[in-house]
Length: 163
Image (tube, rainbow, N blue to C red; front, side, top):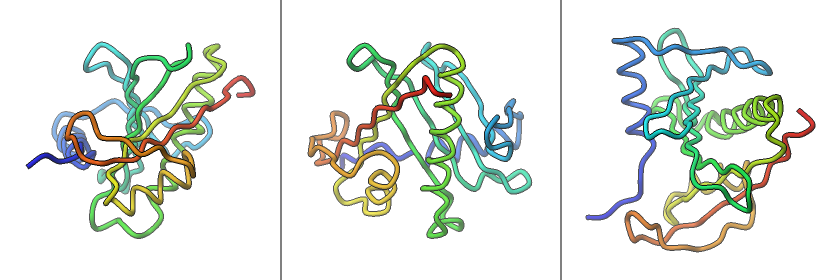
């Protein structure tokens, strides 16, 4: 049965590698208890932001660079929170903090603006609430290109020139 991409799998993999092999993390500039890891698994940048409790990831946000939109960089967002940490506002909080860090970092590197997008299944109420609070209150109904299921496309342009 087809299903939407679930960032929880990325969280589980990140936690496993973090515990066994170590992943180099840098503290945020704006928020020093938000940690970031930059890699390029497909040749394009992917920024992974995490909140930790000791060595446990309590929330994760990934921004994977996708093709530019209107001449500006675009990043697709994925967010995951382990089940035992859900319903505590962690997803909304980490998305907000990670966007601020990305905005600061890109602005500091001369990128004046960029887009954030999220594709959320129409039946995923928690993710719809997070996307509406952090990206856009006006999503566009779409069909997810990977699963073929109904979804909502959230899009937000972020000005980073003031960073």
